[in-house]
Image 1 (cartoon, rainbow, N blue to C red):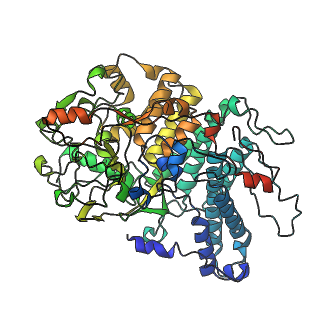
Image 2 (cartoon, one colour):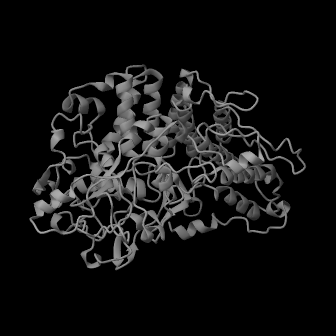
Image 3 (cartoon, rainbow, N blue to C red):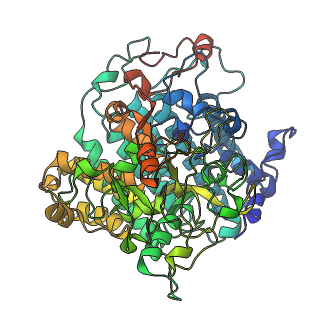
Length: 632
């Protein structure tokens, strides 16, 4: 299914169209207007997405070389430079424009003369889901917002347009109302019948899965009993946050997650597994391909919603280009493939051991040995290049670490080499000493690459050219929904309640796909605790599982905020290995010891004001009824 086939769906209303009557005078024109509603989808996973560089899981250095190809505005957020005069990567104006477009569509779709009734209902439902999603995007970013239930008439009184922010619970209620209206009956299809032309359009599984995420977010500590926001109120005294915790919010989230899972299963959405029917590869490689494809294979079986407004392609300025390593020795001197995007050491440490438990809890590991050097043996050859020396922390880790994280000496299956029967023929990542240049901005700064962004078939096909499949950025995968369900059950009743079997079933399904044993078996065998028996302990397990499974997908940025764990996460400084070390006289071991010295990259700070974006000062001056977020 070629991307070219999607271009018809993205054919929006042309600029300068004379009147709204023309926009809705035929099915063809109305379809273009619906496509315009979709065109405002936030650009997930690109330089315009604050989760790309604005958090603590992906980092790069400001260099002229990279900034000419990729906006580095997100670094300002991570470095604490957010401001109210010109908010960085803000969505306020764009999302409110999107809501006006959606409302216009809903107000006029009944006027289309040649549109069948069933299609009119479907298109209206799609617009409602988009309207809900745009409101939700604003709530994630700003907290309580003015709700745009309908467009104001052009002759509205001047005071009518000076809207106020509505309590955050009202915001969530309205978003859920829209999703309920859209999901009612059979207005939305369960599956897309023509993926070649309609891939990315709203379905019933999308609507119900979004509802599940919205309700889990509404029940989370940032929005449920948050005393830190208790003083935020409108000028008339209306409180915008209810400081009282409401357990029923988690109960509603449990029901919504289960409803979404059921409809996803009905639609044939399943955790992806690579089908090696030809028996070409061994089990290790099959699992590696499975995990990589689960994120970056277009139209795979677990993608609930893919954002076709954000297509990852291998050209300059995209995530593939920004992360691609120089795996082919024929093109090692490329001056445009520079491995810019890196991840800090703390993210590499976050992944489990091969035993499915955290590094610091695994009783088979000596935590003091993690940075000691170790040489890969034959048993490691499909994960680490045999004979290559790296640190102990890179050995005996879970399969997701090897599938999604690139590190020096790590085997990189694919990229033109696919014979895993001969491990010595496979590509592997080899950082070149002295390649990272602080002046020109060449090279990787942390010692790690977000391998997850790069399809296993991607390779350099010329000195400065990448050949790679393209894919639409996943907004939501089934593993995300499974883990939301597990989280909601634990928060509603703990790990020993009536739905405890469901809790462990769904988190264990995600773990099993990753090649790990279940939670109880793993903690019983490889740790000295049974933390899964308490609500707080199980909360930590579910949260770490989400941080690993959804790593680099933009979910961490919002998750650690809604959990209110961001201050703790940001407290750990961003560190990388000594990638600017030049070749020195001495043995390979001496050079490696010099490289594997943690270097401080950035010491981040995170306070109450950082949970939400500031509203632009100019917008408040135009509409004094808007109150500013706390701290801005």
